[in-house]
Length: 436
Image (tube, rainbow, N blue to C red; front, top):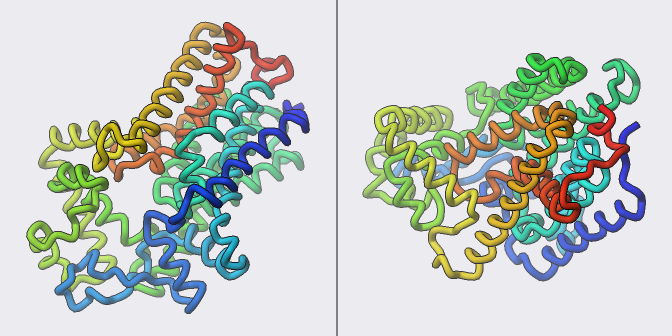
């Protein structure tokens, strides 16, 4: 039997989460557009039925004949399709609440996983930590593909955890239903963020190499099949539109170069890795190379240049990775004064959350018997952590890029809260981990 939260506790948690998000969307957040081009593409879809964004100058430079051309696969389709459908269905006053279900699903899925792993008390502690996280409160209503992908990944993990906890045959109706929904969630997530396929591949590897996860071997294969099918459909669309069977987006190459190139360190001082990629004095050489290229060719060109620079400057790259990780993990905005309210709140909240997580890890190390019992569930999270760390190291900066692995931090912080409240972690006697 899967441990459940009482209806009273569930209602209290749901009310807290939704109330905070509604309040944030109503009074705190004024700009909801996603940090990438998803919103622009979504509006193009909703108004003209065209999947495109007119930012050709980003790849080719303002003097290129293609500078005013529309890019046809600059972002993956998951977030734009979700936004476009929302724009079509919802009246304008409700647009600010478009991502409320996404953020609620993310917190609910992490809470469900915590319930299965450690019982109702851990679930309550985890949900409170997640709901009160200042970044979640402020950024949750923003139309952000990182939140959508994380919500779908955690939904799949929670469903797979029910299969593992239930120890049912994979073909039983409950297990088959959970697997099917998990596969659909992963399939959609694969066309939301480019790091999801790596997460799926690692999940398959961990499940097939770990005896404790043997019940998940075929369920994760089905998830992988769903992700491949979604990517194949996206690739076929790109082949028809731009003549290249591209599984990613044409944003990938330029972002990789901006995040790992010769001007990245200087750009960070202005707030983000792309802050200097519009400077003619810095970009003229690259623009002269790409000005006559097609969209797929330009994408491959920037990716190749990024890899060349990393190989040629490994020490600088390691230093850059450490610097980017510092900004992302602390929540520090480098373009703002360290004593600004934004930085003080961001750094303080991260210090508190990570300190609680360290206390939670200490509780696990102190009670090794319980740690062994929840070990299979922790192993399920390993692919998410590895993928998230990789994205933090090689990608842009910002807390949004670690939101998927923040779910792990919330659970560990929940353990820390229980450790402080109880003096030691007392797992729910009805939890699957306790009975394992």
